[in-house]
Image (tube, rainbow, N blue to C red; front, side, top):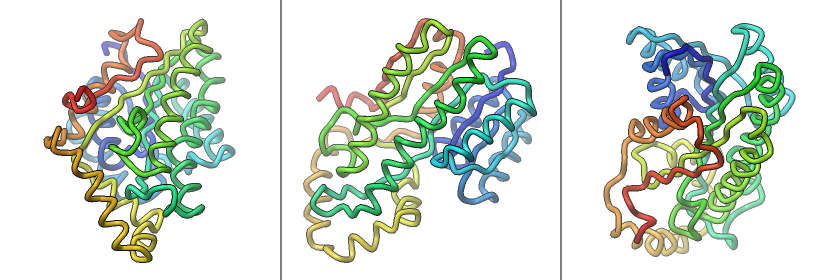
Length: 266
């Protein structure tokens, strides 16, 4: 990316989001790190970017709240004059809970964070993109959006299937307005997603209620890992996002870029 752009990364304080923020900043873009958890982690990521010579800002927002989300993008656009890139990365896991075990609370939290929040982020940024003549959206999906049980439980799989459909729908409907929308679908990644999700949605409590069933479920799903034992690093996913967000991908629209080491090819 030769021209500096304003990039917003949701969930950009840690894990894949942090790697994406670092990669975009390294490419010369000013990155606005959205967070809804630890401000300390967001500040640490900002400091790391700045120490490497990049530019970053942090801004708290619960992207699942549309009013807050709309105000967030308005604030970014007013401060920097535009928004060029939106990376919908914030997400939570459901600890592989099947439909018979998942509570309404966990289902609603996972769907709200993984699917509704990206939709609201897109809905809020579209007017900004339209006004300035274009923009790019990259969603962090998952191979769980293609499979049945390989990548998550009922709520997580449903959310990622929905996010892939949303990506394609947005790509087609806004292609004539110079707005591109793509997604990256990672396989196994070295992150603390499960640990962080446990804290956020309280899935540990659900496990404790039926721990024997949970262990059986995990064993069955984990058997599939033997076909792809290596987990990738967040940096490897971030490089894909950088490409999809760049002008080099100008004719890539509605694409779901699978980055799983060939796992889903088996």
